[in-house]
Image 1 (cartoon, one colour):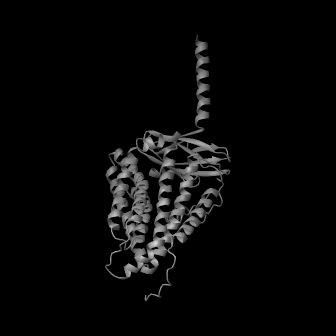
Image 2 (cartoon, rainbow over the protein chains, first blue to last red):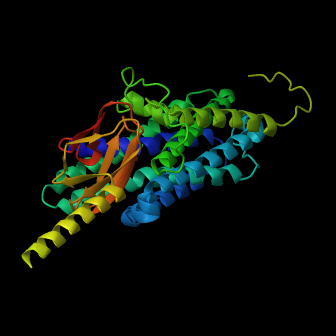
Image 3 (cartoon, rainbow over the protein chains, first blue to last red):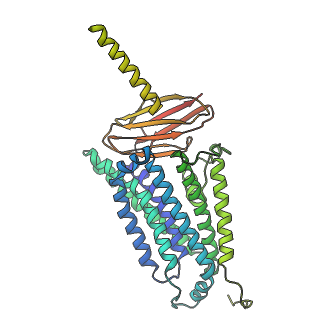
Length: 276
Length: 109
């Protein structure tokens, strides 16, 4: 039962961290609850469908279907996160200002919410499909399944609790800093996802150049450890990155920075040093 | 007649061997949440393809941080895993869904 709990928790954790960050990043944006719910519900539904067709996906493209699917899902998430950060760079200030005045709704639209709902949906879908397959396996085994299943359900609950912890932890950041902090978190998240996506393409036999390992820090921090896993999700920590992974990681960070600089509104008048 | 049969048999066997070696270099089978063989020798610094056959009814996730691979193999099905080029050394792998029993090592030399 403990084993099942841990396996499910590990998968839920990854999606949970992403959901927690996204929720913190959209603090104060009206209608976000609805979009986040849509994202999670869509992800759970998608996870079921993906798990159902796991065999079909796996067999597609000469057995590389699963890798290509994962790479594609990650790539879409990266694009959505970049879009969100660009939007936030443009409108974040207004939202932060509005948040100072309690109860005032922000008029700016729901654009980044669709992007983030997609990110949440994809994260839940990717990790969730593994949970579904795992739990299905337990149920298929029959007899001793109930204890394991209970473990699995507890694992989901623990993962959800961790999501809440991430969210409330980030909420402790003062209002005026929260957007810059979450923007950085999202930039690192996106860079890590892109590096992971490239590795899936490599496994699929599509991107095989620059595949030498740059360093090996498995002795220092194993990717299998809890801290290693957390850092893997948060900043894309990889114990043995390939040259291509490193290149893509840095490229995405630079692209994100440039994009946010371009999107930033030109200062009309010097902002009065707001009373804080 | 008998000789012809033996010859045909041998030819078929050779043809099968050749086809297997060409299509997928290595085969790993999961049965009762264990890998067979538990050790595979592969050439170092070369990309290889391993077909993981899951004979169990339950799904398994073939995973190895060392080889940078994670792949779900649904029950009663098989999946292709591509690894390398790997430096000489031992590379452990495991089945994430049954980590206690599903373990093995790939040896690059």
